[in-house]
Length: 190
Image (cartoon, rainbow, N blue to C red):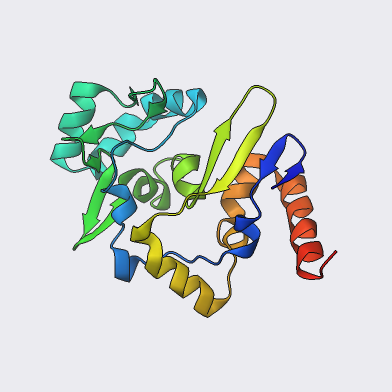
């Protein structure tokens, strides 16, 4: 672990490789698990605002879940998260064949909205846990991502490079440049 500004960062994000391999996992992270995607309070407001524009992209099951539960929910530990369909799929999941995709991101890709998706989804496999004085930035190991780890190793893409855009979105360009310097120093044995 090392400190970077007001973050404590796991060295795993510099040392481990990762590249999503949708052809192998089919977007399992959007349909497996026991909770929705983590959200910030600001993101809950965004979801409420964009839902009417995103709704046409969603499956009827997702719309039904959102209209019953809301555009976001409080999880078992009172964390804010996306709602689930029958405690399984994220309510915002759509499918291209058997591959899970994000309906929010599809609306974004088609220029209907200007918000890509929850930053926690964009950052995955990195998870950020906010504390009073700092944020912990960690690699979330999940066996459904084994193929992503293999592809990342084959392509030699460390996690922090794979999620560069999302890290900049979350922490800013200066923070990311500092992270790159730490990674370079680590690589050179400093």
